[in-house]
Image 1 (cartoon, one colour):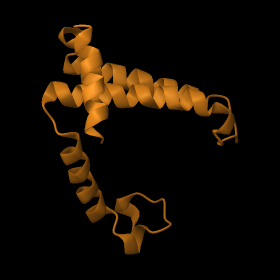
Image 2: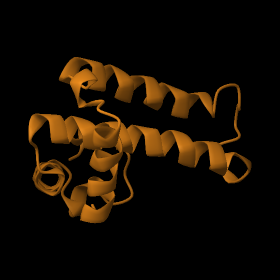
Image 3: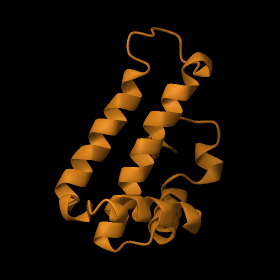
Image 4: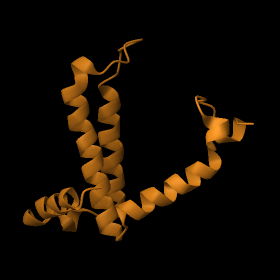
Length: 111
């Protein structure tokens, strides 16, 4: 993630003295709420999975999820690049390209 973006999110929070309200529990709740709002964009859409006419709302809600995730990582002293790369390494072991390529099965079902 661009360090300029990370710094801007933290600066926005700090200029408003909001860190005091950002404990891990409340940040986790906020991430979940914003993720639910992202899902809401698709509520009652039936087979319509295209986002073209919903893109502005998707961008707004996705940004909220990302911002709260940045704030959670900052609060816990976690390096976003490191935790994402660690998770990708774990996933690459679970989902070997040869087995997972073009397949949506969970890693426990891949043969």
